[in-house]
Length: 247
Ligand code: NAP
Image (tube, rainbow, N blue to C red; front, side):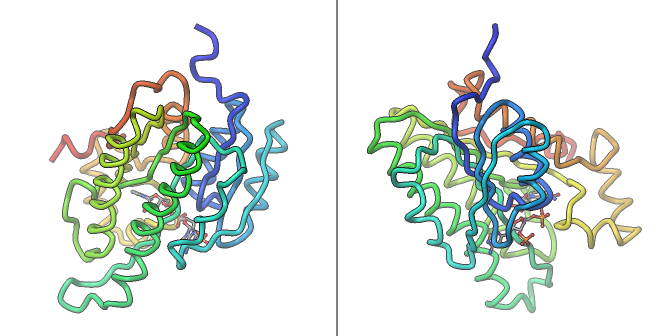
């Protein structure tokens, strides 16, 4: 069937699109024909250039989620029908000393901003009577405790819960809400783990495919969840590497 995975005529916003997973998702969506706004706290010039060089459509938007309400006014009248909440941070510190500042910084960007960005996007679609899709980036730590990352773990459990709640509330409006829960992807976020030979070896032993994931692995999954092929998929929190099953 032609067009099952096409995003032609769709308008997408991807947060944290300057690097890593967000950059690959922006490229994947544009590759299927979406016009993609690459949002970041810094400019996304490299991503925009890569998309345009491949013949796609992209523009940029500055959004800093250290203010979790940063996206509240950006959707009205802007015509977006796809949203990928990818921006996220991690702070590693033992639970016994984990500071309030680290907790608040992580929970604000990774969870509070995700909910209120979804709210602003969903409110606009519902007012227009238009269908749409949201993809949130959760984590393997939406299912597990992890170590030394209390705020991150709490935020990613929260992202999974928010995804399920919104999927339930908005299915009747034709808005699908799903999350991708990556295991270990080679990006800035995991640089400290890959630089530690012991942790790196332990992690590799737990990935069923025997290799670190790539941002492109996640890009394709996000493009699928935004596509007509996934129009009846909602409320899913997908662990893509199978690592959850292996434990
Ligand atoms: P990354 O390369 O560090 O990318 C994180 C992105 O979030 C960057 O674009 C970053 O912008 C942006 N960001 C951080 N704080 C922000 C803020 N206050 N406002 C707006 N944007 C902000 O790491 P990544 O691995 O691609 O992470 C992307 C998502 O995947 C995150 O939600 C992360 O939790 C999730 N994830 C990653 C893994 C993994 O193994 N890598 C596993 C599970 C889940 P700057 O470049 O300006 O910092």
